[in-house]
Image (cartoon, rainbow, N blue to C red; front, side):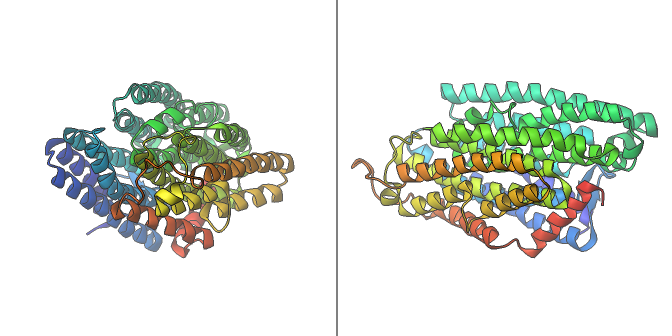
Length: 492
């Protein structure tokens, strides 16, 4: 089978699975499709990445779809987390059905939206066409907004509306930026095709108008930055991420935010290769640091477990933006490593939080005590995930935070690094406080002891193993992808 066909198959699988899930709503059939489709996407992802490492980028549809090393990282995140969270969704929804939160009829809707969400995210990262990139990211909003409002509670519907309104307004700014780049590229090439393909636009970057490119980057940063949850465009995120079912929250936080940042990175590379990296780096440093600092204090005061994780996502997106702002191969490597590590850790944490919420019936950390005594495995996973989010060794995020700080110091950003470290210290304290308050302590007698079951633990244990492995060292194939991605961004 050719490389090009594989690129089409990876999009066709979730498309067919979504259509089947919306149409045929038999529970066992839906669960089979959920596992088979997500396993298929993951399998094709592995084949494609092997091809990219062996022979370079894979293209299809006249270059409109392209899997290079940079998009390989995001595709791996989508495929890996999509599969594990897809498997986790089955017992999670079965429990929600038993307690009456979800009707059997809703299952087809959830699984159909899940596949649609995977499809739109894959299309976002695989697109080499700047117009399709924009359309695909906007399409993620349509699929995921219904997941945010899935429970149909007043708060979840409000969260979904807020998500749609703010992200749609934000993405409109990204459209302005996209049109500016397209218009300038069309002026130079006279061909629509060359003016829309990102790799073709990149070739004429040096000849493009610097003023137009600066304006375009500001619009794109606001637009795609809204989707990535960067401060001050982040206000939709805590409501949306806390109201969705936990597996969907994990996808929103661990995957979708990265899709927004990937598109920022695509334009960062274009602007940087056209007029130099100083302008985009300055903006990213400012927004990144602001995101970390502001999110840190919100994490500290949150009583709602899932809202705390949502603010943690804003903090981590800030660290990634800060790494891109530092720039250079080392700064970009730190940013991309943080992207991977945060995705794995946050998927673990939202899954563990889902277990806790189902066990205790609340997200209020004031009412959750003694998780370790009630659900020991979930409690241990929660400790490990919280320590990783706090930046503690030997877990994954410690490595990327350490890389970010050391590179920032090496590049001479002393004051900014001190501010960053102070904010990270607040986050570490907040995570320790969270663990002490919820995992330890004396639980109420009304809670039955015992974890929710093997099916809800196995995907989380696998995520824990990956998180620990990434904390010990970056696998060689991933390191190759990270290094080559940094070269692509810097024009190597």
